[in-house]
Image (tube, one colour):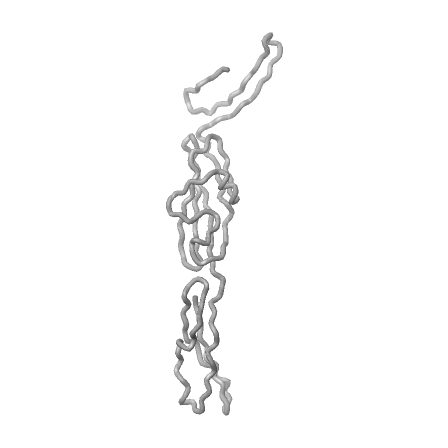
Length: 193
């Protein structure tokens, strides 16, 4: 089995010719065109929009602000891919986020091959909460005189709830139907998550 070592990084075009014992028949094979300066390629998984309240809503890899090692098959399983000209040495991702609602995560995948070529690609992940907060209408109030109309009081809303946070209650307005005997005033409160 013949071997050969190169004294530089190339590029090289390598071919192999094999002859039979009588040197009558031979076959020639092009083995590879190798250039260690050619960078590998990496494509991040498709951008992701997911429903949730916080960073735990990401369902591919856990959120991490420090590099996390993954395998080529794990990258492929979430829709990414890579092209290598030499052996894979390291494949990592790390995360950075901004915002609160929505939360915008930039996930950076970085590939290093055995020739010390490094390449990166980014995936955008948006975490949104589209579930509206809830509350029940306060009980109606019947009064006899305009002077008896109570001042707005957010504490009359007692069952405000939200899937992600404790919602806040605020007074919005009083709107009269401009009639008399009876006059109806609609008092509106807002519930915000």
